[in-house]
Image (cartoon, rainbow, N blue to C red):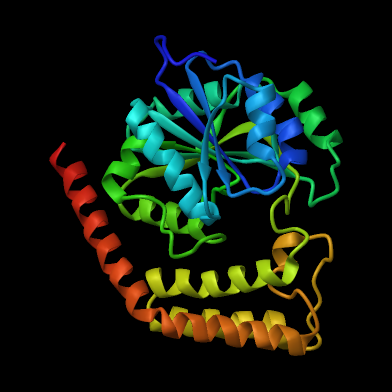
Length: 316
């Protein structure tokens, strides 16, 4: 790894919680990146499987931050973001511990971002294995890749995204009120409303899928549904919040609804029997009622930061 040179420094934050088996393929893939100014940082969220010690022994060039508690996707990444800002990174790449990348992923993403200072977030072409471990389609895409191209993106998944470091200066850190799930959507929404462009490059990135919560489906469902409702409370009018309440009730609780058992995202909205799902929905509603004052305070703070960022764009 190099942290110098003519290219903007990119700090790659790998978030890990009890994921040593995923790090065995993820870290070698990331270390094969051909970008000449990269700093690789592992944030370990209180793992109990020896992940940090294993990485320290086998990859001494990887910087490690060990959190004494599991701070979730939001809080763990915020630890890494703070360190990246100390290092003076121009860009910060957020990477789950269960991805494989094309060696040119950072080079292509930075090349795209450097064409327009308003580009704040760059996503990638994701090949999601849905927990199967299947890599054939990804490997074929790597072999057939013929160079970068990019275009606008509505959604960028947090398992692999490049963020302009100054975006966090303007909009603040990832919202830790989410813990895990929907906080990447929240970041994209805030960025777009603040005047940043959100794009996707055509570089293939492989994602195992469910690497952290794949074996804890009910827990993951509780987080996903409560956070989807919190996302609506932060960004939608009352009618939109009511729609999300009804939508999640229908998807999880109506007996005739079916989901693809291999689609982790869909299963998180309908993880079990409709009666169990109704209990999860009630928990999500109750949680959001209890935390409504804090959510509304965060909404106001975000709106202030967004307005300030837009004024800065207008003054340039």
